[in-house]
Image (cartoon, rainbow, N blue to C red):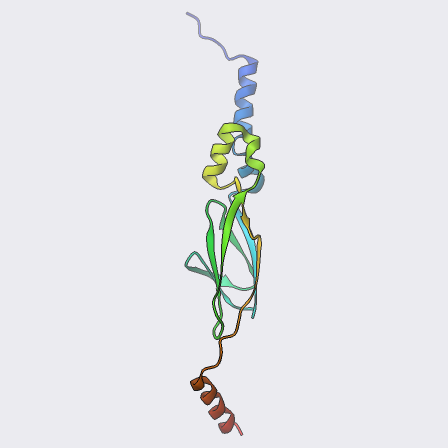
Length: 141
């Protein structure tokens, strides 16, 4: 029995499946840069429990799962926000194979918010802090 040769339709179908698989992943990748700014600047950025730098900066985050972002600065309350994933809408272009690839890699999602601009709240001065400030002023006179 002779072997069947692939038809041109089969080759076109196979090529289309491979070319379109992971379409959203190819369009915008598996990571997203989130712009992080704060007032005061030079605050510490903590992403998912790990220090990643200081403000202002762009933080590259995996689109695969949500993240917890904290911004810390001495004398200020910690700012905390959740970066969530939402459907990008581009995953529908690749068919079933593409949808599977996009969901596994995170390419099917956008992270929101796409930027964080935090104003940290100053902690109230304690009695000891006020007393120390007062003694510094007296010694400097």
